Length: 89
Image (cartoon, rainbow, N blue to C red; front, top):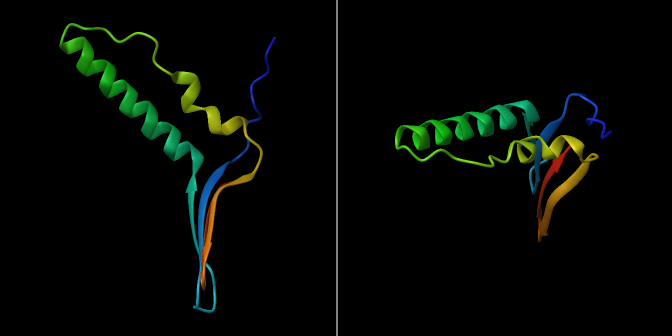
C-alpha cells in the first residue's frame, strides 16, 4: 500500500539578491496554493455541471504533488548583479 507524504509545513519561497545589502525573501505557505487550486477545480466542475457536461478525471493527485518532493530549488537564475531563486522548503 502506498504511503502518503508526511504532513509537515511546506513553503514556496522566492529570494531576490541584487546590489542592495540584504536579500528580499517572499514566502507562500504551500497549503494556500493547494486550496486555491482546489477552489479553481471546484469552480470548473460546477460550471461544467451547469452546462450539462460533467467533467471526468479531475487531477486531484496533481494538486498535492509538490508535497511529495524534498526541499529543492525549482528555478534559479543569476545575471550580472542579480540572483533570483524559487524553491520548495
